[in-house]
Length: 385
Ligand code: KG4
Ligand code: ZN
Image 1 (cartoon, rainbow, N blue to C red):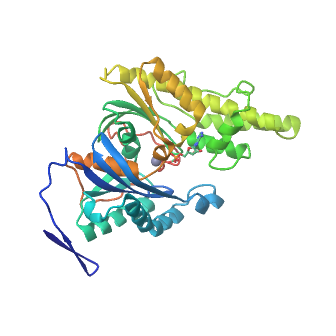
Image 2 (cartoon, rainbow, N blue to C red):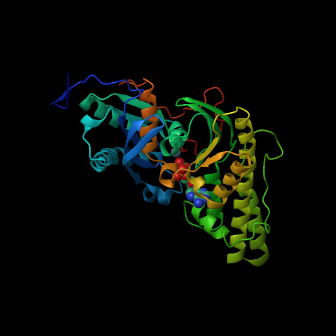
Image 3 (cartoon, rainbow, N blue to C red):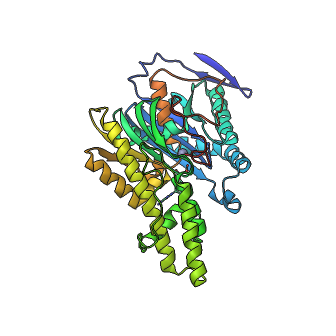
């Protein structure tokens, strides 16, 4: 039995003899606060077979709306204000008390340092009060392990993280073993969608609006470049697309004095089709590298907000089918930032006998594959994934 004193209160915690964490069911609380979503979730199960008992996400979109991007100080303050409410709500939704938990998992990076610190401090406070262990989680590992939470994907599988701040191909070989095959050398595709929306006078976040416009557009009217497709490998570049779009838009405006609705739809379609073509061709190359490893079961999974795009999703599904590989697209709520993925990644680490202590620190940068870290500038927002 341990007695933990916290804030003048005294908690009794009975230490029962527990079976091996490798095989027994674990219940993990997860916290996420690395960018502009404050989230808490409870996940229960074993590695490769777990379920979400509760997942709560408080977005901050309206707090940053006037600034054209995420303001780190505003984000950090909002996380600090909302985290404990989020935890309370997640625990109430899961219908359990702290005594039913095995550990507290928290995003320890990469991300905006103020936000990550808010989460780590909250986790330490909870750990001090309850005596529960802390498990620091890499936010990108959270995304990359989601196919195991949703579909029980066996290692190794190929993963494409494609969001507002990141774009990379990874082979997930184990809970903490990822090989990076390539990624963007400049903007992330979500960023490019957002900039395109701005150039076309559409609201933020731009992806869904550009997709809607593109539905009635002709992708061939304004052909956009497909950078780096002429070079081998899986690296990508998206920053040239917005310049091409800006030029195409300005020449229409110069000619006609403005954009018609059809012009706007055609520009959106041209842009989206270029992004889809780049992602599809680079996915094909990444799949070939993955298939060469001769995995017993082939799986290709996507995560990140851009994976919500139905044209991109269909193109990736198609290239996957051609190489006889199962395509996994987790439900959108688990593709975008959430704490269930952090709780699950924490479960995998804890089940492998790993945990942290009060010395756990927040890391603004933390590449998943330390052997081939992301190139500088890859995803200019950097912190997001
Ligand atoms: O993963 P996410 O929610 O947040 C992070 O970036 O961490 O991704 C958000 C990004 C935004 O840039 C948004 O414009 C883009 O995903 N996005 C889309 C679509 N829905 C969201 N991009 C293209 N098509 C969509 N339907
Ligand atoms: Zn993310």
